[in-house]
Amino acid sequence: MGIIGFMENEIFTALLQIVTFFNQPANDEHILAAANAPRDPNLLPIIVRVGLQPHVRVGELASQLGKTHSSTSRQLTKFEKQGLIQTEAAADDRRARTVILTATGQSLYDRITAVRAAKIHAVLVNVPSNQQTVMLRSLQQIAELLARVN
Image (cartoon, rainbow, N blue to C red; front, side):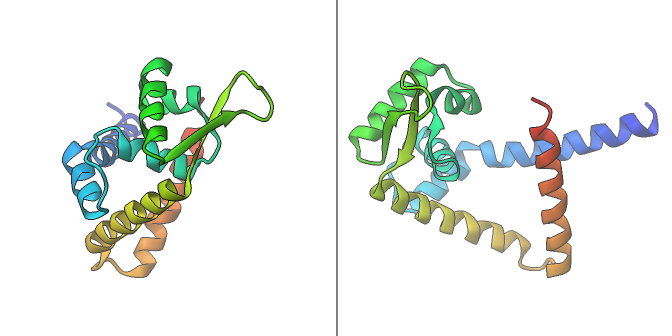
């Protein structure tokens, strides 16, 4: 493997380790417990994505979650009945549905964000702020480059 292939593989491996960490159900369970939230394995990924992307379309949300539109719609209906989210017709296409957090959902999102921030702070507490800034810029650059792929 050449030097370019090696670097690409190392970047991919590091990204996979990060994704694996954040996708571990035990991490979600801990965050939900600390945020005093219902212990539903589908809750955290949906609340976080809708919190970060208000008015996300149901189809786009399903794609991000790696679920079918039907499965995602069922989960959204459940969370809508719990008063956490609401769906509405998309402004540009009345056939499409978008999702937003209710006030209760926003409160839950804020608690989840605080718990997650505390966990990340605990990991980075001994990393100098200038190195944290470099990490942030690098991660943002990777995110921007990956967003261009699709």
